[in-house]
Amino acid sequence: MKKTLEDIDVNGKKVLLRVDYNVPLDEDLEITDDKRIEATFPTIEYLFKKKAAIILMSHLGRPKGKVVPEMSLKPVFARLSEFFGKRIKFIGGDCVSSESKKMAKNLKPGEILLLENLRFHPEEEGKNFAGERDNAAKDMFAKELASMGEIFVQDAFGVVHRAHASTTGIVKFVKDAAVGFLCEKELKFLGKAIEKPMRPFLAIIGGAKVSDKINVIENLLGKVDTIIIGGAMAYTFLKSFGLSIGTSLIEDSKLDLAAELFKKAKEMKIDFLLPQDHVVTDKIDFVNKNVPSDAQIDTTIDEAIPEGFTGVDIGQRSIEKFSKVIKSSKTIIWNGPLGVFEIDEFSKGTVQIARLVAEATDDGAISVIGGGDSVSAVTKAGVDDKISHISTGGGASLEFLEGKELPGLAALPDKI
Image (cartoon, rainbow, N blue to C red; front, side):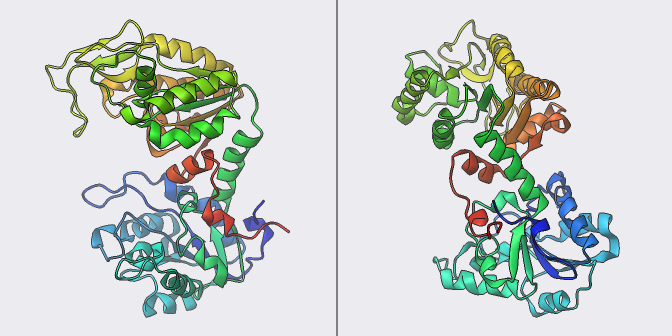
């Protein structure tokens, strides 16, 4: 177990708080979803009560080590100002400039300083200005960040799978470090779901590619009672059985692997469920996420998809079959949508599954949703407030489910 915020002395200290404010912006640079910001408020409020001065550190987008005005954290500052008023300050341009350091030095208890985008510096991601890997440069940048505070608190679960200056490097240069309440909550729900699940334990895995989820499936095979596979990755499994999948998206190079995973699940007596029917179309624009007006949309009678048609969602028979498993499960992990849910005509399956997971949660199941698309799906279904835990870290939650060590957590001190 890692040290938590309540394990360390933050009274009257300057606290460097790593947050994940990589929020979506529209073309006018307005924030369209501030859930990641609000998720850090419990940690911030606790630090206020302890009369700490708070220095917020985050990235936004992928500026690739250069100053990109459109990726400034200025919109985040504006949103934070709505909640914290004059207590929050912001210095744009450079997170380790002399102005930023001076403001950090003069920061008073109960005040917040938001630093500019960390990734305007290539050193944050362990590179020098030539774009080469450079651990010395990363450490130097981490030391500069650390010089502005005394204590480091990691509350950005979305980046703990990255060995960056602000996740691993900074820990070496502060007096003490711990996880914040958001990170602690992530570890509690994900860890308990994987290591000590209430049974029956169900994993719902969707998305486009088997290759993206191989390690997740393999790691979960030794833990779950049932796996439901949906999304385009299901077509690769179905083709590996010799079934027709029409023009559906598949990975031909992963057919043998899909067959092997299915065989392994059966040998371990794990129910490995695939769609029994599909919503299909003969025309779809994947790039612009729309359906041409002259497209033919139909539902298959079984697992096979006819030539000339592309699978885009699970059908009603599949929903009914999956429903029975979901309702009887006591722990549910879901990563990845079961169809092209961004298009309304093909969102029914994913939305229905989201509502079923919410109903199971109401009946006492623990539900954990990970991955950006899955989070969007439960939000679209209007049940995001009925899920036990929605992970704020897409890549991090995926690597956690794969059983990988997360560098940003491994670098933190353990409880004594």
